[in-house]
Image (cartoon, rainbow, N blue to C red; front, side):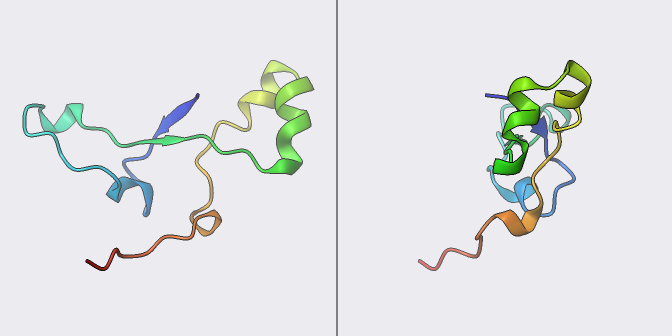
Length: 70
């Protein structure tokens, strides 16, 4: 599973609680690299350069996210 730093992402940067045992600079947020179905062939059969182009965070609108009501 590949991940990227998501510290600057408007959605994914809110996903994990801080770990008080770690320094702030060691608490980066990580997000799975999600591929759109249209990108599967490029990922599986493309060149290294073509696959590298897909190493990006998913658009926020790919997710159905909202506040949890308790």
